[in-house]
Image (cartoon, rainbow, N blue to C red; front, side, top):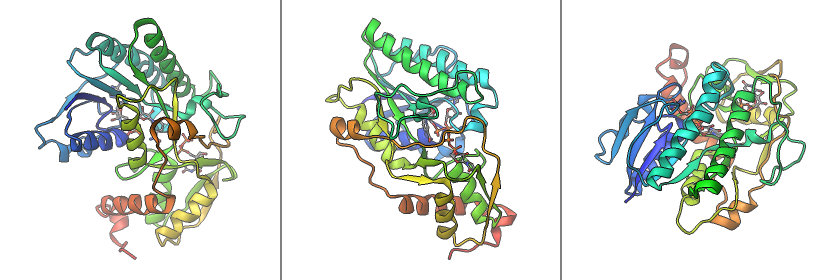
Length: 322
Ligand code: NAD
Ligand code: UDP
Protein backbone atom coordinates (compact mmCIF):
# COMPACT_ATOMS: atom_id res chain seq x y z
CA UNK A 1 0.00 0.00 0.00
CA UNK A 2 1.35 3.41 -1.02
CA UNK A 3 0.31 6.86 0.21
CA UNK A 4 -0.63 8.58 -3.02
CA UNK A 5 -1.49 12.23 -3.56
CA UNK A 6 -3.65 13.09 -6.58
CA UNK A 7 -3.83 16.81 -7.31
CA UNK A 8 -6.94 17.66 -9.31
CA UNK A 9 -8.48 14.52 -7.82
CA UNK A 10 -12.02 15.94 -7.83
CA UNK A 11 -11.90 16.56 -11.58
CA UNK A 12 -13.00 14.27 -14.39
CA UNK A 13 -9.79 12.28 -14.90
CA UNK A 14 -8.60 12.66 -11.29
CA UNK A 15 -11.78 11.17 -9.79
CA UNK A 16 -11.45 8.06 -11.97
CA UNK A 17 -7.80 7.78 -10.99
CA UNK A 18 -8.58 8.11 -7.25
CA UNK A 19 -11.25 5.43 -7.60
CA UNK A 20 -8.85 3.02 -9.30
CA UNK A 21 -5.98 3.65 -6.85
CA UNK A 22 -8.34 2.92 -3.93
CA UNK A 23 -9.47 -0.28 -5.64
CA UNK A 24 -5.80 -1.28 -5.85
CA UNK A 25 -5.56 -0.93 -2.04
CA UNK A 26 -3.69 2.40 -1.79
CA UNK A 27 -4.26 5.37 0.51
CA UNK A 28 -5.35 8.37 -1.55
CA UNK A 29 -5.10 12.05 -0.69
CA UNK A 30 -7.15 14.09 -3.16
CA UNK A 31 -6.00 17.72 -3.34
CA UNK A 32 -8.23 20.13 -5.23
CA UNK A 33 -9.35 23.78 -5.21
CA UNK A 34 -12.68 22.84 -6.91
CA UNK A 35 -12.21 25.34 -9.75
CA UNK A 36 -13.49 22.83 -12.31
CA UNK A 37 -13.70 19.78 -10.05
CA UNK A 38 -16.79 18.85 -8.07
CA UNK A 39 -17.35 17.25 -4.70
CA UNK A 40 -20.02 15.16 -6.44
CA UNK A 41 -17.24 13.41 -8.36
CA UNK A 42 -15.74 12.04 -5.15
CA UNK A 43 -18.65 11.74 -2.67
CA UNK A 44 -18.87 8.00 -3.39
CA UNK A 45 -15.23 7.68 -2.24
CA UNK A 46 -15.71 9.56 1.05
CA UNK A 47 -16.87 6.50 2.97
CA UNK A 48 -13.61 4.71 2.22
CA UNK A 49 -11.25 5.16 5.23
CA UNK A 50 -8.26 5.12 2.87
CA UNK A 51 -9.56 8.24 1.06
CA UNK A 52 -9.08 11.83 2.18
CA UNK A 53 -9.94 15.09 0.42
CA UNK A 54 -8.16 18.38 1.03
CA UNK A 55 -9.19 21.77 -0.38
CA UNK A 56 -5.93 23.38 -1.46
CA UNK A 57 -4.63 25.43 -4.37
CA UNK A 58 -1.38 23.94 -5.69
CA UNK A 59 -0.02 27.38 -6.56
CA UNK A 60 0.75 27.42 -2.80
CA UNK A 61 3.22 24.99 -1.17
CA UNK A 62 1.89 21.94 0.65
CA UNK A 63 3.63 19.87 3.32
CA UNK A 64 2.39 16.27 3.49
CA UNK A 65 4.07 12.86 3.62
CA UNK A 66 3.50 10.80 0.48
CA UNK A 67 5.09 7.98 -1.56
CA UNK A 68 3.71 8.94 -4.95
CA UNK A 69 2.23 12.07 -6.54
CA UNK A 70 0.01 12.35 -9.60
CA UNK A 71 -0.13 16.03 -10.60
CA UNK A 72 -3.40 16.47 -12.50
CA UNK A 73 -4.49 19.84 -11.13
CA UNK A 74 -5.18 22.18 -14.05
CA UNK A 75 -8.32 23.10 -15.97
CA UNK A 76 -8.27 21.12 -19.22
CA UNK A 77 -11.03 22.51 -21.41
CA UNK A 78 -10.32 25.62 -23.53
CA UNK A 79 -13.18 27.68 -22.00
CA UNK A 80 -12.01 26.88 -18.47
CA UNK A 81 -8.28 27.39 -18.97
CA UNK A 82 -8.92 30.64 -20.90
CA UNK A 83 -11.26 31.98 -18.19
CA UNK A 84 -8.30 33.12 -16.05
CA UNK A 85 -5.18 32.58 -18.19
CA UNK A 86 -2.78 33.95 -15.56
CA UNK A 87 -4.10 31.52 -12.96
CA UNK A 88 -3.74 28.70 -15.54
CA UNK A 89 -0.07 29.59 -16.02
CA UNK A 90 0.43 29.81 -12.24
CA UNK A 91 -1.21 26.42 -11.77
CA UNK A 92 1.04 24.87 -14.43
CA UNK A 93 4.27 26.55 -13.35
CA UNK A 94 4.07 27.45 -9.63
CA UNK A 95 2.00 24.30 -9.12
CA UNK A 96 4.68 22.15 -10.75
CA UNK A 97 7.42 23.75 -8.64
CA UNK A 98 5.43 23.14 -5.43
CA UNK A 99 4.69 19.47 -6.16
CA UNK A 100 8.24 18.86 -7.40
CA UNK A 101 9.68 20.38 -4.21
CA UNK A 102 7.39 18.08 -2.24
CA UNK A 103 8.55 15.07 -4.29
CA UNK A 104 12.16 16.06 -3.78
CA UNK A 105 11.76 16.32 -0.01
CA UNK A 106 9.71 13.12 0.42
CA UNK A 107 11.55 11.18 -2.35
CA UNK A 108 8.17 10.42 -3.87
CA UNK A 109 7.83 9.34 -7.49
CA UNK A 110 5.87 12.02 -9.35
CA UNK A 111 3.76 12.04 -12.51
CA UNK A 112 2.90 15.17 -14.47
CA UNK A 113 -0.31 15.06 -16.53
CA UNK A 114 1.08 16.64 -19.68
CA UNK A 115 -0.90 16.95 -22.87
CA UNK A 116 -0.97 16.59 -26.64
CA UNK A 117 -1.35 20.40 -26.60
CA UNK A 118 2.45 20.60 -26.23
CA UNK A 119 2.49 19.69 -29.96
CA UNK A 120 0.27 22.73 -30.71
CA UNK A 121 -1.09 22.71 -34.27
CA UNK A 122 1.24 19.93 -35.40
CA UNK A 123 3.04 19.95 -38.73
CA UNK A 124 4.07 16.31 -38.18
CA UNK A 125 1.41 13.60 -38.30
CA UNK A 126 0.93 11.39 -36.31
CA UNK A 127 2.71 12.95 -33.34
CA UNK A 128 5.63 11.06 -31.78
CA UNK A 129 7.35 12.10 -28.57
CA UNK A 130 10.41 13.25 -30.55
CA UNK A 131 8.37 16.01 -32.27
CA UNK A 132 8.97 19.40 -30.62
CA UNK A 133 5.64 20.91 -31.61
CA UNK A 134 4.24 23.99 -33.28
CA UNK A 135 2.83 26.26 -30.56
CA UNK A 136 1.80 29.91 -30.82
CA UNK A 137 3.53 31.27 -27.70
CA UNK A 138 1.25 34.31 -27.37
CA UNK A 139 -2.13 32.98 -28.57
CA UNK A 140 -5.29 32.35 -26.56
CA UNK A 141 -4.32 28.72 -25.97
CA UNK A 142 -0.76 29.59 -24.93
CA UNK A 143 -1.56 29.89 -21.19
CA UNK A 144 -2.24 26.16 -21.25
CA UNK A 145 0.12 24.98 -24.02
CA UNK A 146 3.15 26.95 -22.85
CA UNK A 147 2.23 26.38 -19.19
CA UNK A 148 2.28 22.63 -19.78
CA UNK A 149 5.50 22.89 -21.80
CA UNK A 150 7.14 24.83 -18.97
CA UNK A 151 5.91 22.20 -16.49
CA UNK A 152 7.57 19.49 -18.60
CA UNK A 153 10.76 21.53 -18.61
CA UNK A 154 10.58 21.84 -14.81
CA UNK A 155 10.02 18.09 -14.40
CA UNK A 156 13.05 17.20 -16.53
CA UNK A 157 15.17 19.87 -14.81
CA UNK A 158 14.28 18.53 -11.34
CA UNK A 159 15.12 15.05 -12.61
CA UNK A 160 18.51 16.05 -14.02
CA UNK A 161 19.44 18.47 -11.23
CA UNK A 162 18.02 16.71 -8.14
CA UNK A 163 17.39 13.13 -9.30
CA UNK A 164 13.61 13.35 -8.76
CA UNK A 165 11.89 10.21 -10.13
CA UNK A 166 9.50 11.58 -12.78
CA UNK A 167 6.91 10.26 -15.23
CA UNK A 168 5.49 12.54 -17.93
CA UNK A 169 2.57 11.17 -19.95
CA UNK A 170 1.35 13.37 -22.80
CA UNK A 171 -2.36 12.70 -22.62
CA UNK A 172 -4.44 13.03 -25.80
CA UNK A 173 -8.18 13.91 -25.69
CA UNK A 174 -9.78 11.72 -23.03
CA UNK A 175 -13.52 11.34 -22.48
CA UNK A 176 -15.95 9.36 -20.35
CA UNK A 177 -18.52 9.52 -17.55
CA UNK A 178 -18.29 12.54 -15.20
CA UNK A 179 -17.07 14.94 -17.87
CA UNK A 180 -18.39 18.35 -16.98
CA UNK A 181 -21.56 18.88 -19.04
CA UNK A 182 -20.76 22.57 -19.59
CA UNK A 183 -17.02 22.47 -20.16
CA UNK A 184 -17.33 23.20 -23.87
CA UNK A 185 -15.34 20.16 -24.93
CA UNK A 186 -16.48 18.55 -28.12
CA UNK A 187 -17.75 15.23 -26.74
CA UNK A 188 -19.63 16.74 -23.80
CA UNK A 189 -21.11 19.51 -26.01
CA UNK A 190 -22.25 17.10 -28.71
CA UNK A 191 -23.79 14.60 -26.26
CA UNK A 192 -25.73 17.31 -24.39
CA UNK A 193 -26.91 18.86 -27.66
CA UNK A 194 -27.93 15.48 -29.12
CA UNK A 195 -29.77 14.39 -25.97
CA UNK A 196 -31.63 17.67 -25.81
CA UNK A 197 -32.43 17.66 -29.54
CA UNK A 198 -30.55 20.92 -30.08
CA UNK A 199 -28.32 21.75 -33.09
CA UNK A 200 -24.85 20.18 -32.95
CA UNK A 201 -22.30 23.00 -33.10
CA UNK A 202 -19.52 22.00 -35.49
CA UNK A 203 -16.73 24.58 -35.47
CA UNK A 204 -14.99 25.42 -38.76
CA UNK A 205 -15.42 22.89 -41.57
CA UNK A 206 -15.60 19.93 -39.19
CA UNK A 207 -12.75 18.34 -41.15
CA UNK A 208 -10.26 18.91 -38.31
CA UNK A 209 -9.36 15.65 -36.57
CA UNK A 210 -8.94 14.39 -33.02
CA UNK A 211 -8.25 10.98 -31.43
CA UNK A 212 -10.43 10.14 -28.43
CA UNK A 213 -9.32 7.85 -25.62
CA UNK A 214 -11.77 6.38 -23.11
CA UNK A 215 -10.96 7.35 -19.51
CA UNK A 216 -10.40 3.77 -18.27
CA UNK A 217 -7.68 3.29 -20.90
CA UNK A 218 -5.99 6.55 -19.94
CA UNK A 219 -6.09 5.63 -16.22
CA UNK A 220 -4.58 2.19 -17.03
CA UNK A 221 -1.74 3.97 -18.82
CA UNK A 222 -1.10 6.47 -16.01
CA UNK A 223 -0.88 3.74 -13.36
CA UNK A 224 1.27 1.46 -15.53
CA UNK A 225 3.66 4.33 -16.13
CA UNK A 226 4.13 4.77 -12.36
CA UNK A 227 5.22 1.17 -11.76
CA UNK A 228 8.66 0.32 -10.33
CA UNK A 229 9.83 -1.64 -13.37
CA UNK A 230 9.37 1.23 -15.82
CA UNK A 231 12.13 3.75 -16.58
CA UNK A 232 10.73 6.07 -19.26
CA UNK A 233 13.52 7.92 -21.06
CA UNK A 234 11.28 10.94 -21.70
CA UNK A 235 7.62 11.91 -22.10
CA UNK A 236 5.23 9.14 -23.19
CA UNK A 237 2.16 9.63 -25.42
CA UNK A 238 -1.09 8.15 -24.04
CA UNK A 239 -4.00 8.30 -26.44
CA UNK A 240 -6.13 6.35 -28.84
CA UNK A 241 -4.59 6.33 -32.33
CA UNK A 242 -8.00 6.02 -34.05
CA UNK A 243 -8.50 9.39 -35.71
CA UNK A 244 -11.89 10.96 -36.53
CA UNK A 245 -12.98 14.20 -38.11
CA UNK A 246 -15.22 16.30 -35.86
CA UNK A 247 -18.02 15.89 -38.41
CA UNK A 248 -17.72 12.07 -38.15
CA UNK A 249 -17.81 12.35 -34.37
CA UNK A 250 -21.00 14.44 -34.53
CA UNK A 251 -22.69 11.89 -36.78
CA UNK A 252 -21.75 8.99 -34.48
CA UNK A 253 -23.06 10.77 -31.41
CA UNK A 254 -26.33 11.65 -33.15
CA UNK A 255 -26.76 7.99 -34.14
CA UNK A 256 -25.87 6.59 -30.69
CA UNK A 257 -28.24 9.05 -28.98
CA UNK A 258 -31.03 8.26 -31.51
CA UNK A 259 -31.28 12.02 -31.83
CA UNK A 260 -32.99 14.15 -34.44
CA UNK A 261 -30.41 16.95 -34.03
CA UNK A 262 -28.90 18.51 -37.15
CA UNK A 263 -25.42 19.97 -37.61
CA UNK A 264 -24.95 23.72 -37.45
CA UNK A 265 -21.67 25.36 -38.43
CA UNK A 266 -19.94 27.92 -36.18
CA UNK A 267 -16.58 29.75 -36.45
CA UNK A 268 -13.40 27.83 -35.68
CA UNK A 269 -11.74 29.06 -32.45
CA UNK A 270 -8.36 30.77 -32.76
CA UNK A 271 -5.32 28.44 -33.12
CA UNK A 272 -7.56 25.35 -33.15
CA UNK A 273 -5.26 22.43 -34.13
CA UNK A 274 -6.18 20.96 -37.52
CA UNK A 275 -5.16 17.38 -36.83
CA UNK A 276 -4.16 15.25 -33.89
CA UNK A 277 -3.28 11.58 -33.61
CA UNK A 278 -0.77 9.99 -31.26
CA UNK A 279 1.95 7.54 -32.10
CA UNK A 280 1.67 5.22 -29.07
CA UNK A 281 4.46 2.82 -29.99
CA UNK A 282 6.60 3.93 -27.06
CA UNK A 283 3.83 3.20 -24.53
CA UNK A 284 3.34 -0.22 -26.10
CA UNK A 285 7.02 -1.09 -25.83
CA UNK A 286 7.53 0.41 -22.37
CA UNK A 287 4.38 -0.66 -20.51
CA UNK A 288 2.59 -2.96 -22.97
CA UNK A 289 -0.18 -0.37 -23.14
CA UNK A 290 -2.67 0.02 -25.94
CA UNK A 291 -6.21 1.40 -25.63
CA UNK A 292 -8.83 -1.35 -25.44
CA UNK A 293 -12.13 0.57 -25.64
CA UNK A 294 -13.36 1.52 -29.11
CA UNK A 295 -15.14 4.83 -29.72
CA UNK A 296 -18.69 3.45 -29.96
CA UNK A 297 -18.35 1.49 -26.69
CA UNK A 298 -16.84 4.46 -24.87
CA UNK A 299 -19.40 6.90 -26.27
CA UNK A 300 -22.30 4.60 -25.29
CA UNK A 301 -21.06 4.46 -21.68
CA UNK A 302 -20.57 8.23 -21.64
CA UNK A 303 -23.99 8.90 -23.15
CA UNK A 304 -25.72 6.77 -20.54
CA UNK A 305 -23.94 8.72 -17.76
CA UNK A 306 -25.04 12.04 -19.32
CA UNK A 307 -28.58 10.72 -19.75
CA UNK A 308 -28.79 10.02 -16.01
CA UNK A 309 -27.42 13.44 -15.12
CA UNK A 310 -29.51 15.38 -17.63
CA UNK A 311 -32.70 13.66 -16.61
CA UNK A 312 -32.96 16.20 -13.80
CA UNK A 313 -33.17 19.01 -16.40
CA UNK A 314 -36.62 19.93 -17.68
CA UNK A 315 -35.56 19.67 -21.33
CA UNK A 316 -34.35 16.13 -20.86
CA UNK A 317 -37.30 14.84 -18.88
CA UNK A 318 -39.06 14.06 -22.10
CA UNK A 319 -36.20 11.83 -23.24
CA UNK A 320 -36.46 8.12 -22.70
CA UNK A 321 -34.05 5.27 -23.32
CA UNK A 322 -34.29 4.01 -26.92
P1 NAD B 1 -10.76 18.81 -14.98
O1 NAD B 1 -10.91 20.26 -15.20
O2 NAD B 1 -11.98 17.97 -14.87
O3 NAD B 1 -9.87 18.53 -13.70
C1 NAD B 1 -8.86 19.40 -13.24
C2 NAD B 1 -8.93 19.44 -11.73
O4 NAD B 1 -7.88 20.29 -11.24
C3 NAD B 1 -10.24 20.03 -11.22
O5 NAD B 1 -10.74 19.23 -10.18
C4 NAD B 1 -9.85 21.42 -10.71
O6 NAD B 1 -10.70 21.89 -9.70
C5 NAD B 1 -8.43 21.17 -10.24
N1 NAD B 1 -7.59 22.36 -10.20
C6 NAD B 1 -7.43 23.30 -11.16
N2 NAD B 1 -6.56 24.24 -10.75
C7 NAD B 1 -6.13 23.87 -9.51
C8 NAD B 1 -5.23 24.44 -8.58
N3 NAD B 1 -4.55 25.58 -8.83
N4 NAD B 1 -5.06 23.80 -7.39
C9 NAD B 1 -5.74 22.67 -7.10
N5 NAD B 1 -6.61 22.08 -7.95
C10 NAD B 1 -6.80 22.69 -9.15
O7 NAD B 1 -9.81 18.28 -16.17
P2 NAD B 1 -9.43 16.79 -16.56
O8 NAD B 1 -9.94 16.55 -17.91
O9 NAD B 1 -9.76 15.85 -15.48
O10 NAD B 1 -7.84 16.93 -16.66
C11 NAD B 1 -6.98 16.54 -15.62
C12 NAD B 1 -5.53 16.75 -16.03
O11 NAD B 1 -5.24 15.98 -17.19
C13 NAD B 1 -5.20 18.20 -16.35
O12 NAD B 1 -3.92 18.50 -15.87
C14 NAD B 1 -5.19 18.23 -17.86
O13 NAD B 1 -4.32 19.20 -18.37
C15 NAD B 1 -4.71 16.82 -18.19
N6 NAD B 1 -5.17 16.41 -19.52
C16 NAD B 1 -6.50 16.10 -19.70
C17 NAD B 1 -6.92 15.75 -20.97
C18 NAD B 1 -8.35 15.39 -21.26
O14 NAD B 1 -8.70 15.19 -22.42
N7 NAD B 1 -9.21 15.29 -20.27
C19 NAD B 1 -6.00 15.72 -22.04
C20 NAD B 1 -4.69 16.06 -21.79
C21 NAD B 1 -4.27 16.39 -20.52
N1 UDP C 1 -15.47 21.57 -31.35
C1 UDP C 1 -16.62 21.68 -32.13
N2 UDP C 1 -17.79 21.94 -31.50
C2 UDP C 1 -17.91 22.09 -30.16
C3 UDP C 1 -16.74 21.97 -29.36
C4 UDP C 1 -15.54 21.73 -30.00
O1 UDP C 1 -16.56 21.54 -33.35
O2 UDP C 1 -19.02 22.32 -29.67
C5 UDP C 1 -14.19 21.27 -32.01
C6 UDP C 1 -13.04 22.19 -31.65
O3 UDP C 1 -13.04 23.33 -32.49
C7 UDP C 1 -11.84 21.28 -31.89
C8 UDP C 1 -12.36 19.89 -31.51
O4 UDP C 1 -13.78 19.98 -31.60
O5 UDP C 1 -11.49 21.29 -33.25
C9 UDP C 1 -11.95 19.42 -30.13
O6 UDP C 1 -12.27 20.45 -29.21
P1 UDP C 1 -12.07 20.29 -27.64
O7 UDP C 1 -12.30 21.63 -27.04
O8 UDP C 1 -12.88 19.15 -27.15
O9 UDP C 1 -10.57 19.83 -27.45
P2 UDP C 1 -9.16 20.40 -27.97
O10 UDP C 1 -9.39 21.42 -29.06
O11 UDP C 1 -8.51 20.98 -26.77
O12 UDP C 1 -8.51 19.19 -28.52
